[in-house]
Image (cartoon, rainbow, N blue to C red; front, top):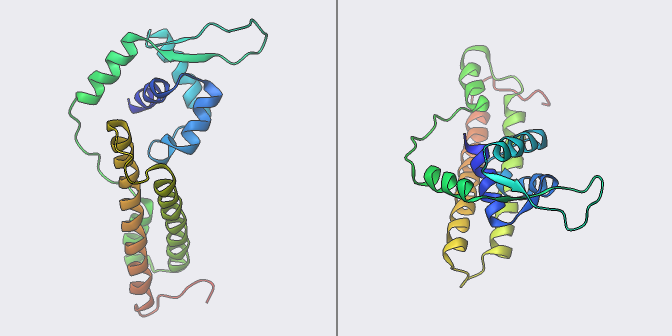
Length: 185
């Protein structure tokens, strides 16, 4: 149920067309709540049908013009209701961890190479988040909105820091196992 709430959040921040929303998801919200462009457009239609959003009237009638959406009072109320509701944490599911568990019974062939690849991907993501933090959250930028957005970014930074540390440890651990060969070695 969170995709509609992510869309409502984005539209309350700034009324947007579907294309603008998909681009914003690709650059910000998508870091912690991903959705395909098709899912976003489909959900916009549902939100409009439910009376949570509406397409803004076009400034000039033109064929093929992008519809821009805004949140209606019912949509704001739904987002406020959802925000204040209690939710339990979701169990963590990660195929890499399951593959490590499976390697205990079938062997580690190629796994170390993939751990290194994951490590590099997490290092890049961490560097990107840290750059966003430097650029978008300088000292003194402490409005309520900025502080809450920064908390979300800090969660990303802390998670990527965890993964880079854990993956570095995992690669070293595999280096020390007898018979744990890389496929490239």
